[in-house]
Amino acid sequence: MPPTPPHGTPASPSTSPGWWRDAAIYQIYVRSFADSNGDGEGDLPGIRHRLPELAALGVDAVWLTPFYLSPLADGGYDVADYCQVDPRFGTLADFDALTATAHELGLRVIIDIVPNHTSAAHRWFRAAVAAEPGSPERSRYVFRPGRGADGEDPPNNWQSIFGGPAWTRLKRPDGTPEEWYLHLFDAEQPDLDWTSPEVRQEFEDVLRFWLDRDVDGFRIDVAHGMVKDPALPDIAPGQKAALLDGQTRLPYFDQEGVHEIYRRWRSLVDSYPGERALVAEAWVDDAPRVARYLRPDELHQAFNFEYLTAEWDAAALRSVIEASLAANGAVGATTTWVLSNHDVTRHVTRFGDGARGLRRARAAALLTLALPGSVYLYQGEELGLPEVADLPEEALQDPTWERSGRTERGRDGCRVPLPWEGGEPPFGFAPEGAEPWLPIPEAWAALTRAAQRRDADSTLALYTTALHERRAHPALGDGAMEWVAAPEGVLAFRRDPAFACVANFSDTAVRSPLPGGVLLSSSPVTTDGDAFLLPPDTAVWLRL
Image (cartoon, rainbow, N blue to C red; front, side, top):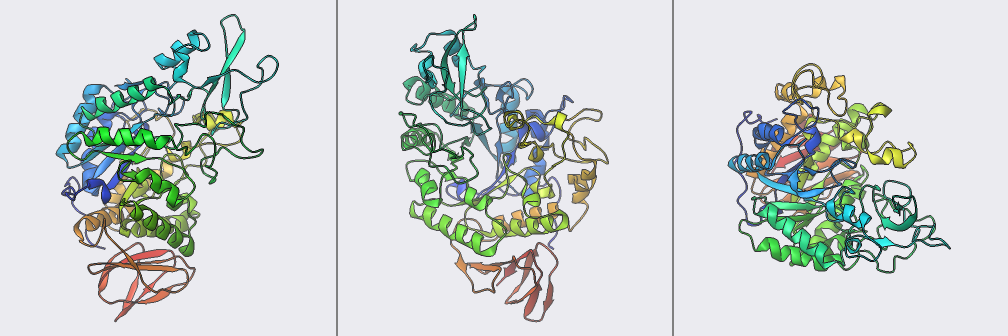
């Protein structure tokens, strides 16, 4: 394995046109990244302090999850004020300092924008609750009278993504029930009504506020969900509301009206200098539907959830890769590749138990980093962190836990704070003696960044070497690829000039030609003259 670049030495940032087209972007879950003040929650000064380590890793940009003023009913995705930093995370001055430091290190900064809903603590929703039905205050949200003789039933049968009905009925101070409001997520997250000109103007002003503070782009939360069918029709009996089951042809997802919004947003960000990017969290049916968000006058990127949710199977992954490249290429967009994020089980655990899951995760990293386009990394995947499936019930904070009647544990297991250094919790995430907001497993002592930095064969070393090689090699990043004939259960492709990737998904070792030399491998491979033996669940980069 090639040597790891020295710790603390940032690599040169990408200077290609449209920096997002081949960037490696690192997702920071703010609450779990680094705690500077000992309150147990990550914060902006903590992120700023650790940015040199991300520059040394070799990424090009960071994406910050919401740090806005919020009651944290849903981890910050319930925003009470889009232009204020929550005091738990710092101040606007802290954000400005973080952005300046990132830019000095050659890192761009993407922040989350949450336009589908606000917090119930937002000034608009408080005003709506206090106002009368039909008032201008209520026109900013989706309020409707109930069904039934006394309006006792919800306006339709829509279900919350987090479980239970998607409607909650308001009550006056004297207990008299009245209208219902829509919340596709938690009841503390009322959905905005994007037919309101005031809503549209407000979010354009929010975008300008952060663009003026020099952010490099926005990740759009629930980008497919802002516009609803105005008839609010019932969904089919038994149809699920979940985002992960492929059922996105729903009257509240992927409606045609979202594209008008994004054309306006694209025009707005294009009016700023410095190549600002817009990336969609769009859970829609398939690659062609995703590509509709990426037409030249709309968004720059969309997360590739078909790739994220694909099984560990060569044929399935090849199908997703081909469909993604074809659909995005047809609209002139590059494809994004992502293995994990803050909403799904970490891929080390998804891919298998224990050592097998880690071996597959390492192979998946090399496959992903070799594909054409850009890649999004979720914090901790470079350490090979697994899902924490045994968090005590009293520690769980994801709203899914309560809304499902405590039958679904939710997403806390992938949001456990990062281990940085030391032999016991909190492993440098927070000052010694601080209690992290979610408990960190003691077994993570072997997975800390400091421990892995001392091990040339660690997952951190693999990611660091791969990211630097990806940036330096002229074949990698944006561009084309060509499949190469390979045995069943093996994916092989080349990228010009002089690069190939081979990944073995089968249960047996595969002998393969070695036309040049091994650049990097996810697990040890043996070479024999003009061939090499590729073990199961292993990927290799070849010099041609």
